[in-house]
Length: 435
Image (cartoon, rainbow, N blue to C red; front, top):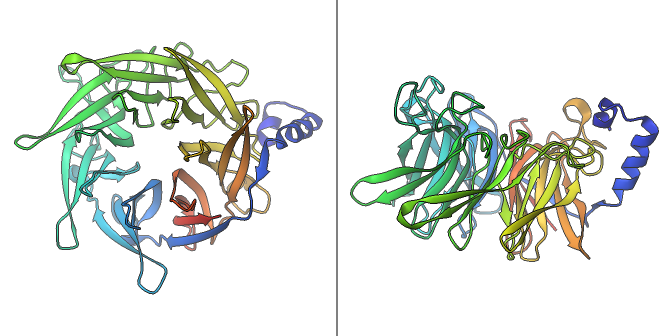
């Protein structure tokens, strides 16, 4: 309600609006949360971010953005003998050319190799990214229980006066195709545009070669009107098309949803599927996470702000032949529905959507500004309407606080994820929610 009051909405109308929306926000059946691991700082890491990556054999992999003494880590979480879970730090970043601040969910190939990104570091030293323009790395099991790390690409940015226009500050995660190529986005880089001398960002492809390592190809540069500053990654459909969002750009500078289609000769065609206009009644804008696609080819995503309650929205882009239509799903109300949905949504086999909000619901929680510690939510469709339910509301120490997305589901319906803070030491945690 704090946000409605800031908008100048009267108290009586706030209460009425909350009551009107409350029918769409319910509490799911009894759920049990277990903290699988508390981060304690130092060599154990601080602030796990993004989602977890399962290996299919009971292990989960993730990243911490930093530690007290280093520049971030990659960790492995495994069931421990006799019960509980054991955490193994499989790589610690050193900064500089080695890379710094991994920030996105890891990708895993069929051989068990992990691929990820660091926002900074590497040997790219453009004036627009003087701490390094970021890297893409690979971690491979070495056969003796350890892991070997290789930097497979260093982003160079777009140095002034240089004919070379590369990306800089990768984020949002990577996606693998069946041939082993990697696709991702960078927040900045590409050619200078009307929005930024540092560039409006790019979509890139990294292709492996047995003789020459990895080769980068910029498959799309954003120019502002078609989108700018992609903060989420891309997803890949069965036909090889890529889909993603931009945080800014478009006619109203409120963000876009885009599609990239492969053509003969290694070229790509770009299309803007939707532009957010900040004034369409939902006031949805600035998507900061990637998308998820259902079995019919419809796309789903969130914006961390906007909506009548200024607390974020969930949306669907419904495919109809060659056209797309935005369909509102849910307006987060900042009370029962949470504030600020973060990270991509996760879809189950029944078409239900799961995600997290950074804050809310506030009742019974002790967190900064009393806005609540965040929640895991579920969106269920029935008779053409969507209803939100609270799967779990975080409560602060020693519970988690500020969950990051996406969450993952196992075959039994258990939900796994991370919180950037909270836990016993208030430095983040890995959690499991069981039905």
